[in-house]
Length: 224
Image (cartoon, rainbow, N blue to C red):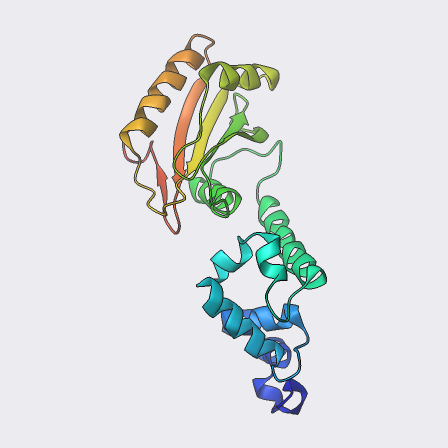
């Protein structure tokens, strides 16, 4: 039966308008983006099939475009809609931290970094460059690596810190495995970077590790 024949309270779009987006399942939210079904399947049926095929909403949205194109009920136009929705969400979250604003709220910084780095399926090393008053000068992703590691070169970090005239930095990287516990290698590279930046009187404020749900701060764990 087409969704248009369902009771209003059961249609995803009407349900969202009446009860709010938080009350919709992943499949219902996805169905709103898909908008239309195919013969024999509603948009909600297709959404459920996609989540079953890929295993989760995260895995679906991180999949290669060609994998999505091959799924019944999807195509380049709907893929573009999904990607546009993701980017709008990222930009909305980015607006929580603006260049020139002081970073005094660690929860806000963690949330910003979670949404910046969590979507990656490979490891990414990034820096928040700050001035003497902890105001944000720039956020940059400095290294993209494999599933398990990203190569970090102290010389490159120093170069970018000098380019932004930074007085302080916050390091950040993700663990695609989902476990945010800092590794021995994480602690070693942090030590090396601190030593290199200390020669220029640049202070390393923190190193934040982003997992699937958890965000771990070196400073809060006494690892700095």
